[in-house]
Length: 485
Ligand SMILES: *[C@@H]1O[C@H](CO)[C@@H](O)[C@H](O)[C@H]1NC(C)=O
Ligand SMILES: *[C@@H]1O[C@H](CO)[C@@H](O)[C@H](O)[C@H]1NC(C)=O
Ligand SMILES: *[C@@H]1O[C@H](CO)[C@@H](O)[C@H](O)[C@H]1NC(C)=O
Ligand SMILES: *[C@@H]1O[C@H](CO)[C@@H](O)[C@H](O)[C@H]1NC(C)=O
Ligand SMILES: *[C@@H]1O[C@H](CO)[C@@H](O)[C@H](O)[C@H]1NC(C)=O
Ligand SMILES: *[C@@H]1O[C@H](CO)[C@@H](O)[C@H](O)[C@H]1NC(C)=O
Ligand SMILES: *[C@@H]1O[C@H](CO)[C@@H](O)[C@H](O)[C@H]1NC(C)=O
Ligand SMILES: *[C@@H]1O[C@H](CO)[C@@H](O)[C@H](O)[C@H]1NC(C)=O
Ligand SMILES: *[C@@H]1O[C@H](CO)[C@@H](O)[C@H](O)[C@H]1NC(C)=O
Image (cartoon, rainbow, N blue to C red):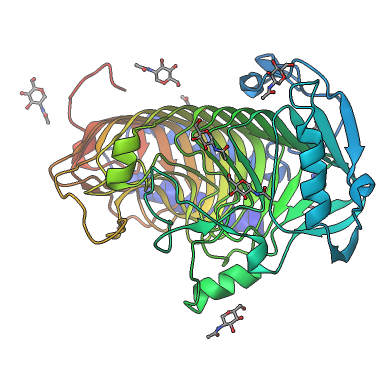
């Protein structure tokens, strides 16, 4: 069935292409070749080989590992082992899926925290289901979930107490004032590892989604894991499920590695973003599978005047070999909170299916800040409604007052080697009036089975393009700078 459908799509593509005499024949040939390459890879179930454990410890810090694949895991430096290793059972933990382990986790962390400057500590969670309220991590610490270990978030909102809003947001993201703390929280830490043998941390977010849906949420929902102002962090080899809000939220952090993670939430669960590096430097997100009700990865840096004031950018961020689906949002988003600036980002080797957008840059008047030097390479999409999208926000500001003169600057977006099958729309590239997005380069981008009547939408953007099919809008055909593309 798949094959038949694909061949008829291919025939349509060829027909369409011949009707359009402006397309060079060579490019058509290349498109067909690219199409067949894509067919071969998608027929092989695991496009990016996310699985298969070989029990090798991954703290190598080298630029390349695991069969020679390019890796940025060296952003995390592991130079020592943990001197004191304890099990949650030694602190009275009960993995029966009912008993509260809040005190056990808090005591364990208090105890292991005493060793942060004495060789460090590790807390093992064995097979079992451990219900807990929020707890805080410590420095020089490893949380290790053994095979079959499950940590479940408490269903009592009081076990997710209210904390201060982040300075770069000024207020809770969804509700004014303070916000619920994350289930697993860290502030001012160094050298933290959250890992294991594919154990699970499940936020049991449904209670929170219901509050959001039925408009009875009083304070902004908590994240599953949030680390504030922390450095040298590794989160790997686990499954995170059902976060109340964004799943992994490092903010004001540096040297953060998130890899070999599976992140799952129901596709309708509101704002359950996968990984949101926010005002962070040196972040490596690799080999993750994410399914959620919002962006799989969203790079942020603060909200309007608060983000501008804190001025903590997100920079040197790599997102690589991520695959997944999000029917209402994007594979990788930048923004919409980006007031502290976002620069030097590499997004590569993504496979996004059944989603609203592939890569989306979101900003707005009032944000200020900048998005510069973004490289997006090797993006494969199937049934992604709008493959590439730049969009203005939906009047989403902290409070009623915002400065219409605070315009974002977007410059230098390099998009190459993109192939999309089954998209409904051509790229929708809308910059901001009075602050046109500049130096947008599209190279080797093919949307293979769009209806011939479908047009690109481009507003307030300028740039260049080559080998783009179907033919891009005139704003990308200017001869701004031949070196751009
Ligand atoms: C980890 O568990 C998740 C959820 O059960 C599963 O989808 C994923 O394939 C597992 N990953 C590995 C590497 O076994
Ligand atoms: C983490 O998962 C990857 C992929 O499944 C595997 O190759 C690696 O050995 C695992 N690392 C550890 C420390 O278990
Ligand atoms: C963590 O351990 C390292 C190496 O032993 C040490 O230099 C550092 O001070 C420790 N950090 C804290 C916060 O204690
Ligand atoms: C965790 O840290 C936050 C501050 O970051 C604090 O408000 C909260 O009380 C701490 N929770 C525990 C259980 O110590
Ligand atoms: C984190 O460090 C900052 C700056 O040193 C300090 O103001 C704040 O109280 C610390 N927070 C916690 C929870 O330790
Ligand atoms: C909203 O959802 C919460 C959580 O499920 C529930 O306790 C509450 O009764 C609901 N409120 C309304 C008005 O439906
Ligand atoms: C653009 O970003 C890349 C990747 O982060 C970096 O290597 C390069 O130096 C940056 N270019 C400029 C001009 O900053
Ligand atoms: C164009 O992109 C496709 C798919 O991403 C890739 O297979 C092909 O090698 C690229 N062609 C060139 C000339 O770079
Ligand atoms: C291309 O460059 C030439 C010479 O600089 C200029 O006259 C022309 O207007 C440019 N074309 C476009 C579409 O910008």
